[in-house]
Image 1 (tube, rainbow, N blue to C red):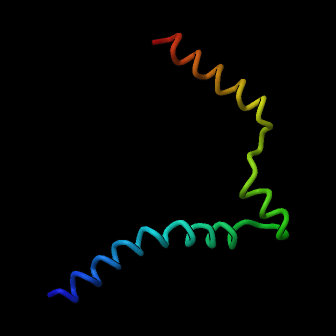
Image 2 (tube, rainbow, N blue to C red):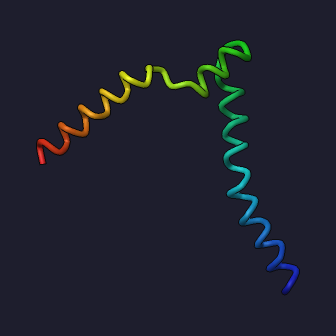
Image 3 (cartoon, rainbow, N blue to C red):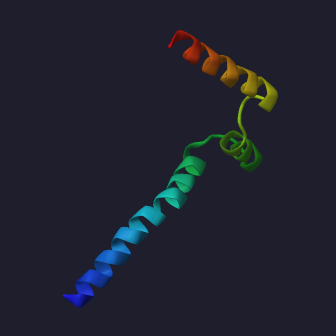
Length: 67
C-alpha cells in the first residue's frame, strides 16, 4: 500500500508539471513559420504596450461606467 501511495503522489504531481511543457511543444509544432517567426508569434503580444494599456483602460472605464 505504501508503494501505491508513493507512485500515486508522483503521478498526480507530474501530471500537472508536464502540462505546461507539453503545451509549449504542441504550440511549437502547430505554429507555421521559421524558428524566429514561431518565436515572435508565440512569445510576443500583437499590439504595442501603450495602445494595449489605453484599450484596457477604456474597457475598464466602460465596464465600471455601466455598472
